[in-house]
Length: 470
Image (tube, rainbow, N blue to C red; front, side):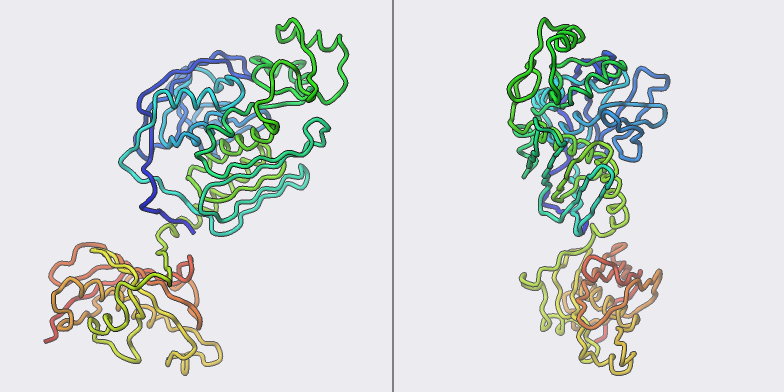
């Protein structure tokens, strides 16, 4: 189910701009990066100010062009690499809207984690904006599998955004690790400090092929997955301008100490936060990822984004909680509407504002019309669904007059009517009517939608007139 909750916080941006300088891990380019506040609804965008026309690329999964050694975006001639650690820091800090200006092709690697970005964002502060932050709640399991890489990822329905990451590289040093993020408020402390990692054999390949021009063993955990001779360690020390390099008891190079026993798993979780930011929508789901990587994160993000786009209309689905008392019960409805058995088709009103009303109709096998409308295949007639919608709209229209019992409403026009799903015995119709324009001279223009669960069953634009009957 996709929805906007009016109790949710507002969107946020930075209080002021700030510049960060550093080296790109893979390109070796020294980059100046400026984070600038942006208006509500702007999202996260990167701008290459060093290129002609200063092209912009949005932080969107549709623009991912490479996931080999990080996540790379490219659009309109703007190419930006290793975006995931900065994106994770922005999500973890609650920053929704920011322009990231760069005079180079890659986000600075800093210490290989999100912590330096978090520290800088906290130093300048964030500020709320005059727009709600719309979360999209996943109401069904969304899964991604890669049999070849043995990757499995799933998004489960959840009231919060939670992530569980599991890693297993068949490494005697790392073993099997897992990490949890139960609430995004814990990101800064539990996940942000965790640095990227690589295996020694990967490091040697990258060095030999000049693929980590900005590499420094202080911005990565190097897992030693094979015996090392003193000559090999000395050669590695020269590459990284160190006097001496050794191997710690934990099986990692002794340039740094682990910040958490499961720091590699936590960093994989950090990458998930950054890569899933490319969905473009804040989500509420429990993400469980087994052996994730940038390529699988991006493919998974594409699946979630496609699901949200397909079901985006559902953010308008009314929430029906049978435990909550009705705004108007059947007795109050009967005092307002002139309809009676067998033609009163609203059981209760659960929401009512100046321009919107939501009513409930419980469809049972005992409905009179099932006797003649496909007796062996009971289906509620579409015209009666429209009648039920109009009665719900009548409750809103007649609520604008002081003596509704003296007025009736009559159809003038029905437009854009679509029946998308059969209505059967046992269905609960959640009927929503919204004013399209203010009521003038008794003319009521409304858009009606019938939901069964979170799916649209029927929709139509209705015009009626309020006429005094007595």
